[in-house]
Length: 79
Image (cartoon, rainbow, N blue to C red; front, side, top):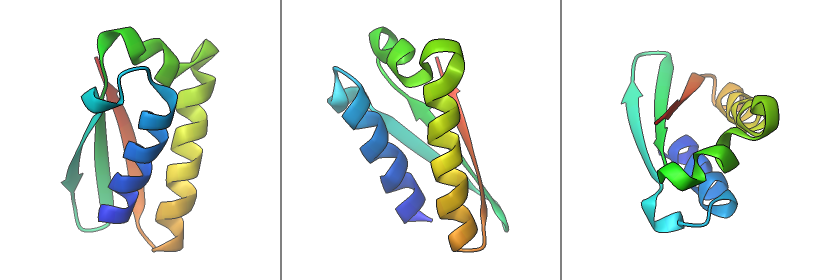
């Protein structure tokens, strides 16, 4: 599951102005991993995007990567 965490960190750090403030916490179940993404408050809009399109795209990539390793992943963006 660490690969999914690394993927989210990489994508988030690429999008924000303060990459050092990106943190991802992983809560793992048997089949599902919940990834909690926390960024600087100034960068929250960059992660969510207009009408949530960027967040939706990140979730889509995460779901595809998780499906490849036969898991389910959920991304939660914390404020």
